[in-house]
Image (cartoon, rainbow, N blue to C red; front, side, top):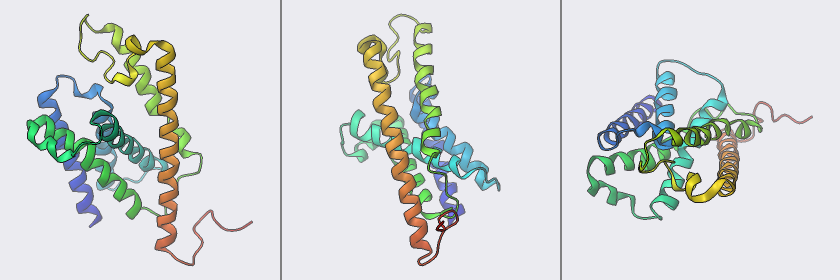
Length: 208
């Protein structure tokens, strides 16, 4: 079941990226495409027998979770995601990359690999990629031709509209969201592991 689930998850991400690429000239500048690209690389590697540190799976799950939450509550205002199916390939891509793969990644996080627990400091290290992404957005913007649409990719990272103070505040809020969500995922992961083995102490939880 695990292998089938992961094949379906990687396939959903690949189809979503292809659909997005058919409608957007540079899809890889979006955090959505990058987080799903990481999913393809990580779970493709797992399907080939790779393992890696426990925290790597947590990082991928966090980035996809934030992708889904930001898309649903901020970019689409909590609307019905199924309406995206009426918007052609781009809508299908958005549905797959913003809803299907995040939900599948969270489910995988809770169901499998529950004995491999990232450290409590892991959510802080998971901030590295989002912060690098924010820097990429800012550095890339001045190199674009005047009048380029979505120069800063997302409105909440638009230095031209927010100013540097507003941008710094937005990054701080986003960083806090990443950390809080990361710890929520970590707690859920540990609770799921304990429920899977009732009455036993997991590695690293022994008293003393």
